[in-house]
Image 1 (tube, rainbow, N blue to C red):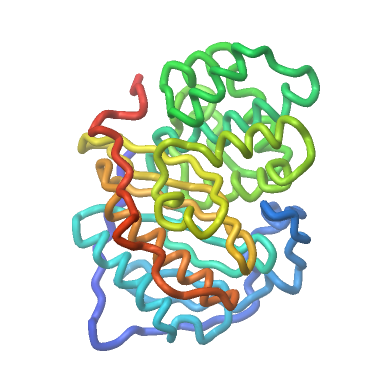
Image 2: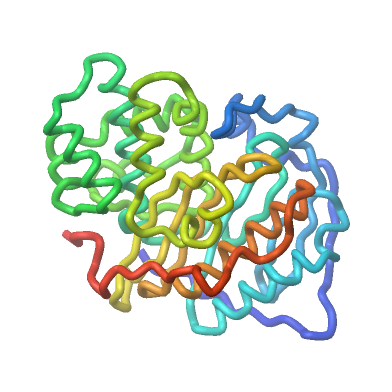
Amino acid sequence: MSWCSPSRSRSSLALLLVVFLVVPALSPARQTEQADAAGEAPASEAATAQSYVTVERGTNGIKVTADGDFATTEAFNQLDDAVEAFEAKGYDLGFEMVDLKTGKGVSLNEDTSFYPASSIKAPFVISLYKELFDEEGVSTSVATTCENCVVNSDNQAFVSLVDTYGKSYLEKWLDESGIAYDQESLSSDYYPYLTPDQLATMWKAASPYLAGSTKGGATCAKLLSSTGISSIREVVGSKYKVMSKAGWYPDTGSYAATVDAGIVAADTGSYVVAIMSNAPEDFASLEKIVDALNIAHAEMTGGDTSSSITSATKVPNGDNAPDVTVE
């Protein structure tokens, strides 16, 4: 699978805004009733029927599902500048951020496929626990393997789980949640290519389970709140509860990746965010995207729009080693 590398340009003097109305923020399959990580009511149909504002940037644009004037705010400018700086390094970037209650959000290249690296481990373990933990229970050894897989991003733990259980539970969960996927790739590859929309929708589908009262959901929520490497947690974790799973691959080529995705329980409402790129392990650049997306969410929902990056913010370090075993 090849990378999409569209050419982009932006005038620093002006932004062309194209506004068109009444397009649902989510497709019908994605409008399943979902509570956020804090247990809030699911988004209503009226809340998700927002206007789209597309900001033209070469052949692509940041898609905004919010009030029509959001693209004129400083928060939007910060996001646009962060994207510009990221892409200036020669990287391709895609993301999707959506408030779980209102449906407001932003996205970029959300339907472009990226190598997910270990970010796929979160949906896999969630589907495994959802199917096994509450129905049959899991042994201590399996629980330990799942913990190593998610918290430590242990490759052999993940491979062991896939080899033992296969992807049938993940496929069942995706089917039940109405999430489209490439069945051949998902079943045959440990790390199948995904789009930001697919990864974000998996987290949206998981949010009621992670916020619920089952032992399996509570265990998964605890694991995802303790992942060792996450730009999302490093940037906003001092303010908000974060459940996330990153993925990375330091070498150039088709497996290059810096990815992070999860749920942020912000004070104005929880939101899902999935950021994918072909940057070879560049968490420093990803943190600026995380910060800009958090500011964008705050602007849309009436929260604190100040930067969360401080002198105490640490850049995640994968020790320049792959967190995936490519086969």
